[in-house]
Length: 133
Image (cartoon, rainbow, N blue to C red; front, side):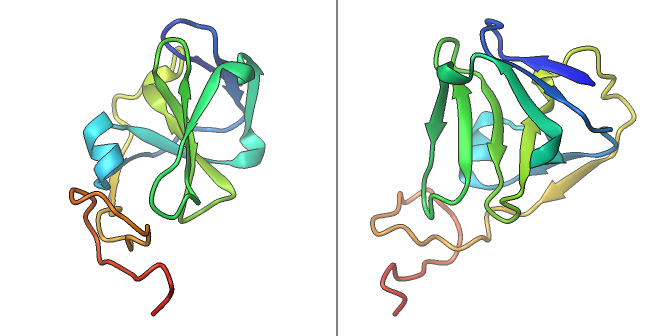
């Protein structure tokens, strides 16, 4: 089991998964927060304390669910838009995990469609009409 927590320690979680690859993403949100993540299946993540402190942020299609500690503001993990049965875990929140030497794969989020009815100008990607037209 790999243990993890936010900065203040109020949100704690554990992973029953072997981390063998790290990912980055160039979507507007991941790029701004400087995310370095590990992709794990939803069954591998268990929030052990502080679930009530998690704050949800969603944008664009609202399929991805980004969770932050409501007390210290640290991004801990998100349910992935392209793989909703997986989470992207903020590996900087993991305890006692050696990240050196793990391969880092860049994922392309900037080219995902923008489908929001009133998208922010700095959200990259092709625009799709919310009505489907």
